[in-house]
Amino acid sequence: MRVGNSVFLGDNGAMRIAIVGAGAMGTLLGHRFCKAGHEVTLLDRPGRVAQIQSTGSLFVIGPGGTGSAVRPTSVTADYSTAGIHDVVILATKSQDLPSVAEGLSDITASDSTIVTIQNGIPWWYLQGLQSDFGSSRIPCLDPDRQLERVIDSSQIVGCVAYPAAMMESNGRVHHVEGDRFPIGELDGSVKQRTQRIAGLFEEAGFKSRIIDDIRSEIWLKAWGATPINSISALTRATMEEICSFADTRKLVEQTMREIQEIAEAFGATFRHSIERRVDAARAVGAHKTSMLQDVESGRTLELDALMLAVLQLADIAGKEAPTLKNLYACTALLNNGLLSKRQRDKVDEP
Image (cartoon, rainbow, N blue to C red; front, side, top):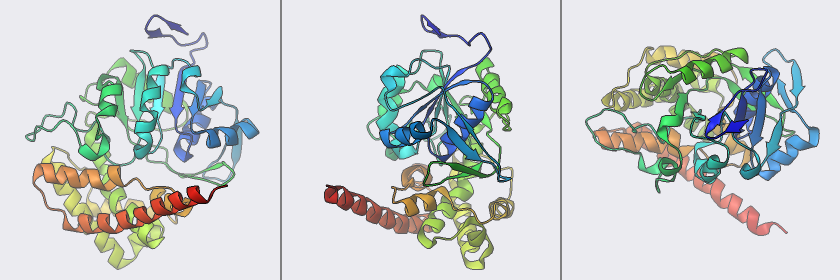
């Protein structure tokens, strides 16, 4: 219920949660939050909305192979009818954020919390960051400053999504492994809302640690995800294959050394070694990265947040990243082919 600019919990203590993007991760979260007793609205494109509405439920298969279905409170493509929510989780791909940004004003109040879980570097990364470089934004992530204009950074809580999940063609989601969603305020503080969001994830069966440097945690995931995703897209190999094959493992490690130098220039710290991070990726097993899943589905790739943003930060910091530049060039060519095919398919549609 909304009174003035305030959003209140229901009588049973349930939160009103909006999940923008009902892909694999958004569906996994929506499923768990529903089971925990919260009011969940999922917002996505009409096609995905219709797919969920055809069954009336979110179906998730857990790591052990057991599946369950839950009915969300609402599934819609119309932000104007969704209402105000306590928490809005941005679970859509980073390249899709501009297309949903304007609708956020319809589902948020001034005290709503916006949780970002995109892969790679977020558009808000430089906002409020104390550094020697003076830049307030990463050009490729918000070229028209639309996100900066529409989303108040004071409402943002950063989050890193570590679970691996895949969506099947029938809309069911397979939760492969992982349960960690560390969160943190952009200024490193711990607020009541931070504790509330961590509790929300914990109630849903996840692990959520509040950390005082969310940017370093973002780098920790992007550190390995950037080369592994691009190599998987180019080779169609799984995480285990890439991190086990000697030559591709060396390529991953060299790229990670370049990324670490860039991140450290902006004050990030790394609590693991490169070897440990790659071993952890290998341990995930024969999992297809999100970028490989996008290639196989003919979707455009998350190049800006995972690769180009890192290269633009390198330029800001005056760092060289030749290996990353080469990987980006090859992956960008692949993405260009995917874009061209999508455009051709649209022209051929009756």
